Image (cartoon, rainbow, N blue to C red):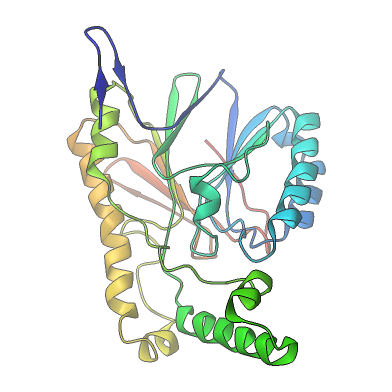
Length: 282
């Protein structure tokens, strides 16, 4: 929805603006916040930077008090570095943390899908979400833990749900949002870089090797994996149709580093940073 006056169009997209400085992207911390803090403290090349985590930072697995404490510590580290960290949602993140400003520190922000980070004259479109291939296990394990808690504590289901935290969220998939992309066009926001959790269908990793077990045990998984990647295809095609000149598309999710080029766009997949702190400088 647009709110117009004669002279100005007010957009619903969230935009974060910075002066020109270094931009670095990493992905998939999976809740290893102490490791991330250590890596940042010992990586001087990331001082004075805009940092983006391309999903799976790992929020929702513990209570809000834990996250407020750990993100406050992380915020202090980033203040000393003169750096700001933006995080997009992965499939191993509770989406609500990214939609209601649950974590919104001065130098750490969990941002909504289709947010734009503007650094100097560079505009970066950020979109999260992907499919959890082990979702059936995560759902059944959550139910087992709830049942065990209720039996042990003689509690109600509501009480158990306050103490046993999820590891899977149904609304994890990325979504093509034409209205949001139209807002870029009508407001003259030219996108040069895209950061997502997963990737378009033709990019690494575009085979099903290694996940046959999960596909065989989840009748809807293969269709959802196809849907996931098709959503990113739609986003890419819309950006191209609208005249955006994309230089790079950076993503995580697949836990491997890969670089390839298609139609003058460089696609960069990053290792999971709880294994290798693999960051890319735009």
